[in-house]
Length: 233
Image (cartoon, rainbow, N blue to C red; front, side):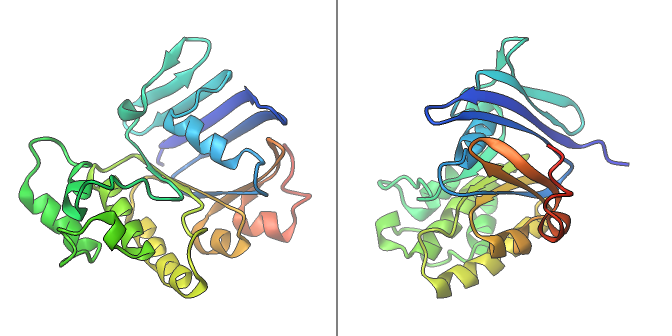
């Protein structure tokens, strides 16, 4: 039986409310659902190391346990030491770098050219290698951002409302693409959204946040079928 586990138990005082999140993920994809401003993105940023919680523990167990953050032990790994891929809403591509340069940023300095070629091919970016982000569509930008993240084989992928800025047709197309990518990903992923359809499509587990507190959690099916039963939080 696999003992691989992502554990997040954090507290942080925010302007409007106190964030208090406690969950464990055993592989697969976890959805965090809730209205804007409820603490979803703050949770992701805490896992990535972009924001520091006030208290708590964030740890990842694969072959060994890696503690990302532990307030009692004064442990706080820098983002680049966490091996976490973060897909921002705006994709955060480097505007002065080409597609292949953006993807290569995710590779080690002594990377094999074949690895870069494979990532370009896998994400259907052939012919776009020399283009800059401003010359790409939203869908192409998202594929570049995902290629950059997956190039360095992260343990955890964090997806912060990745479809929020897209039109309906493109959104449906990219949902299918991303769903296939996550099925092939042998790690942990967390999707932040306020869209129930996205949760159904991507997420095995689900927690619902409201004003920084978990009001329901469990398997996606159970939470939607019987939210009161799932809300033992």
